[in-house]
Length: 159
Image (cartoon, rainbow, N blue to C red):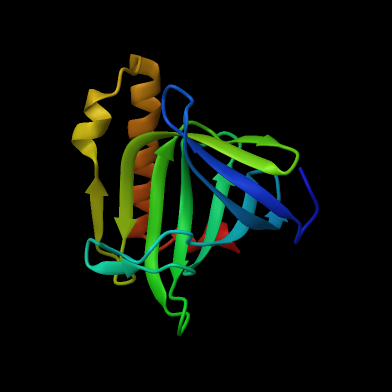
């Protein structure tokens, strides 16, 4: 991959492996599970299920070698308060020099600082042409994320 503090590119892909979003981050940590990066939201301010994602909000993001999800911790750009966690159900991340890519499977979990959560895009996930094994791994990933949300352990992976 690259060394701590070095820039890298994150590429979100759809199921057809077409790029849907790209942004830059900085590597914070590499370990046996994957990597942790720091990135800043690169879109215009966006109201989103009771929070506002603002351009330049700070994201601490965890990508895994073998897990079917990633975890983003979101902090406000102005006062740095925790807005929550956004978790994407994905195929395991793909790592190459200076780049992280992941295939997004539409299903998401938004977790608020008070522990409440929302499962997002279930209908879109149901419509994806996934095989039964991939669909089962994705659902298992969502169950793991919900379990971490309920026990307040999402942030454990971001340290």
